[in-house]
Image (cartoon, rainbow, N blue to C red; front, side):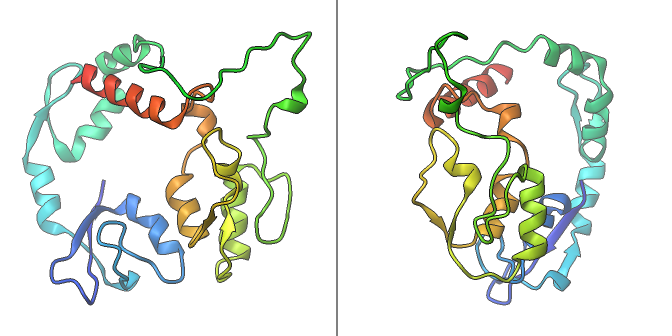
Amino acid sequence: MRPVLATSPQAHVPCRFCGECLQPCLQVPSPLCPLCRLPFDPKKVDKAAHVEKQLSSYKAPCRGCHKKVTLAKMRVHISSCLKVQEQMANCPKFVPVVPTSQPIPSCSLSSCSTSNIPNRSTFACPYCGARNLDQQELVKHCVESHRSDPHRVVCPICSAMPWGDPSYKSANFLQHLLHRHKFSYDTFVDYSIDEEAAFQAALALSLSEN
């Protein structure tokens, strides 16, 4: 993790970010700070030396083997710690912790038609209509071909989700794509539950780990 400072002309104190997390903001024409929402100059993003020094001096115990590691090296350590890997392998199966308002589909191979299942694997570009783009291809296509398009458009990824609003138009679709769709929903989302139930389940799991 490389800590950086992003300073807005209107701000008195620079905001601090992980350099990797700030990268999506730098790929749009007029970047806004994700924290204070003020515009900033990408050329004035500086290395946060004092934060980096703190990360290199402070130590914390690994949640798996309990070995004390500097915060700067914690991510690398956790990725190779056998105890952490064992904990992740034994992580309880994801289940909703509250009743869901979304109807849970029940179908058998003989009665369920695939035409009733929304396509959440490929999407059409909301600007030009280019089709059969997976999530990463859609992001790449829009950044390369529609970087300066000012039109408000509906996010095809969100609208395909059970909680999506197919009529909602994003004011800044490129920033939305780069911030909200950095990973595939298929990897983490249980489509049979609604957003509130997913949030509660994630919160419960987080509390149980601590």
